[in-house]
Amino acid sequence: MGLGDAVDGSYRDRSVDLDVLVLGSGVAGLSTAIRLARHGSIRVGILTKGSLSQSATRWAQGGIAAVLDGAADSTDLHLADTLGAGAGLCDVDAVRVLVDEGPERVKDLMALGAVFDREEAGRLAVAREGGHSTARVLHAGGSATGAEVERALVAGVEAEVSWIREGWFAIDLLTESGECTGVVALDPEGIPQTIRARNVVLATGGAGQLFEVTTNPPGATGDGIAMALRAGVAVADMEFMQFHPTALHHPVMPRPLLSEALRGHGALLRDVQGERFVDELSPRDVVSRAMAGRMADQGVDHLWLDATGIGSFSERFGNIASSLAHLGLDPSSEWLPVAPAAHYLSGGVLTDLAGATCLPGLWAAGEAACTGVHGANRLASNSLLEGLVFGARVADAIASGARSPSPTGAMAGMLGAAPGVPCLLIGDQAPWGATSSADSRSVADSGVVLYDHMKASEVNAARRTLQAAMTAGAGVLRSRSSLDRALGVVEDLEERLCRGARRVPGMDAPVRPTPAGARGADARGADARGGDARGGDARGGDARGGDARGGGELANLLTLAKALLCSAGLREETRGAHARAEFPARSDDWHRRIVHTGPLVACVPSPDGRSWKEAG
Image (cartoon, rainbow, N blue to C red; front, side, top):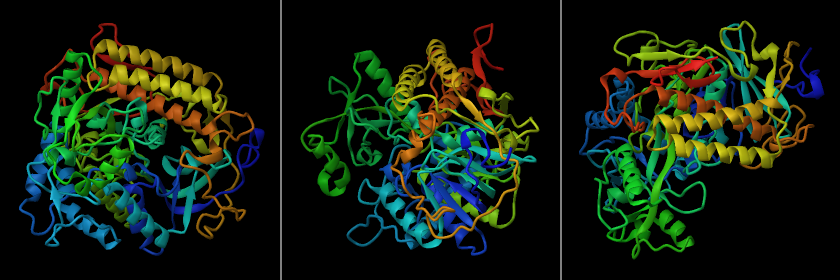
C-alpha cells in the first residue's frame, strides 16, 4: 500500500526532503535552526504544533545565568552551584561545557537583538537567584526574559529559515534501517503526512501538563520524549520533575510565576502564622519540599510570599506587577498566595555532549533532552542557557556530518565509559502495538497509531483525571502507596484510550520530494501557518469526528506518566526533585541514572513490594 492509499485516505501524498527538521519553536529549537541555516547549503525546516512565537520559552520569567566579562564571579563558581543543585547526578563535563560556552552564546543572542536590563551606568544588571552563590542572572524587562529571548530568536528564524510549519503535530518518528529518517505529523487539517529529513532535532520541551497545577502552557505534553520512547531511544531521569516553589495560588492556568528574582531581591516566604520556615535562596527542591511539608502540617493549600519590602516593585518587576494588578493584588501592601507548581523536567532523551541520541540521525536539545547538566534538580536560570549552548552544539555536530553518539556527557554512563554517572537500564517493550527498536519493521512500513475516537470533551476529561492523579501521587512528596494509586489511574486511562485506537497503514511507495518553496507554503501553495496555539483543525477535523491531536497528546502524557512513575518507584531515596516519604535521605546506592531503553508497557510493584520492575 503506497503513500496516499491508506485506509480512509489518511495519508496525503506529499512529502518534503530536508537535511534537518527541527521539532519545536523554543529557545533550543530556534537557536539550532538559525545556526544551521547560516551554513547556507543545509536545508533546514521547523515544525511546531503551536505558533512560532508561543513556546514554553515565552513563559520563562527567570533569566539567563552566565558569567560575563567583568563580573565578580567565575565559571568555576557557576559550575559548583550547578553541581550542588543537581544533588550528585550532574555530568561534570556537561556542566563545564554549559558554564564555559554559555557567555559566548549569550553574546550571540544579544547580536540577534535581544535586549537585557542594564544599570544606570550601562552595565548589564545581574540578580541572584535560589541556589546561586552570587548574582549572575541576566533579566529582560525584569521578569519578561523568556518573551524577549523568544522575540529575538523568532526574528532571526524569520530572516534565515524558509521552511516553517505551524499548527502541525508530530506523532511519530520515521525509523528505517536503524536510523531516523523523518517524522509523521498531522497537518492543520488533521491528516497524517510524512516529512523526510536526514536529521531530526527534538526540541519539543517538557511535560508540565502531567500535573494539574503547572507553570507550563497547554502544549507542554512531552511529545518528543514520548516519540523517542516509542522508537526505543534511551530516555533518562524522568523522576526528576522540578516544582517551582512560588507559583501564584490562583485558578488561572498555567499558574503565573512569581519569579525567583523576587526572593533574590528580599521577598520572604511565610506560613499561615506569618513565620519564616526556610532559606528562600536555597535550591528549588529544598524550598518546594519545605513548603509542601509546612502546608501538610498546617492543613492548607498555599502559603505566602511577602514582597512588601521590595522598593520600586512596579519599576523593577513591571510584568509581574501588571499581572498582579489584573488579578486585584498589590505586592507593596499585601502578601501573595503561593504554592509549588510543576515547572521543569530535568530528564529527557539521553544525549552526548553534541546532542546526539542513541538513534543515528536523531538529536535532542533543551528541556526534551537529558544532557547531564541538571542532574536531579535544575539550578535556577540554567534552562535558557542550556538551550542556547546545546542547540549550538547540535547544529555544529550536524554540520560536521556526525550521525551517532560519542561516549561523552550523560551518554558516557549509558555506553559504559568513565567517568559517567552509572546507569540502570530498564525496558524493552513497546506499548499499544507500536514497534520497538528491536523489531525489524518501522513506522515507514508498519504505519502509525491514531487516537482519534474520543471527542475533545472526553480527551480533556481524561487529561484532567490524569493530572489530578499525578499531582496527588507523584507530586513534591511521594510514597509507595501514592505512586501505586497514580499508576492504577494511568493504566485505566491507557486501556480506555487504546480500546478505540487504530493503525493507519504505512508508506512503502517511493517518496516524491517537493521543493521547500516559500515560507509557510505547502505543496499545494496553501498557507500552512494556520491554526491556533493548540493546533487548529488538527484537534478534531478528521473523518472519525474525534480529537486526533488531543488523543495523541493524551497518549504521550500517559507514556511519560508511566516512565516517571516507574523511575520514582525504583528510586528508593530522596534526591533533588524526587522525594520519597519512606526514604527521606540520599543513598549512595542510588548514585546512578535510571534509563528507559525502550517504550513502556506497564510498571508494576514486584512481589516483594519493595522494588519496581517493568512488565510487558
